Image (cartoon, rainbow, N blue to C red; front, side, top):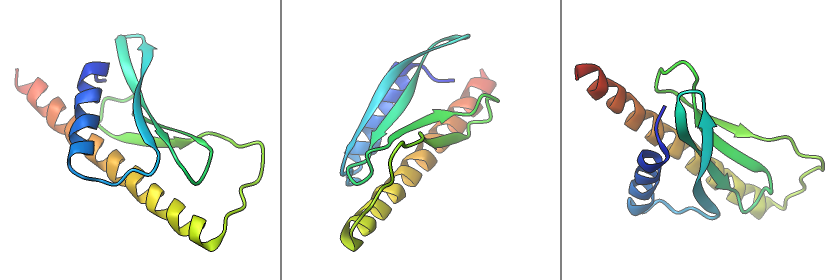
Length: 112
C-alpha cells in the first residue's frame, strides 16, 4: 500500500506529463489496517458514475478501476460516447501508470 502523500506525488507526475483529463483526479483519504493510505477518485465528465482506483489487497502492485453501480440508465449521443471512450482510456493509462510506480516501489523496498 502507498500513503496519500506518495499517491498525490504520482498523480501530480501523471498530470504534469500532459495527459488530457476531461474530469478530475483526486487522492482521497482511506484508513486501512496498515495505516492511512489513499484512494484515487476519477470524476468522468461523460458518465456521472463514481470511479475509484485502488491497489490490490495482495501487495502485488496491481491496481483496479472500480465503477460504482448506477441507479439510472446512461444515455449518450455518439459524440458523448466517443468522449467517454477517451475518458476510459485515460483511466486505463492512469491505472497502468500507478501499477508501474507501485511495482518499482515494491522492488526498491525489497532491496532495503
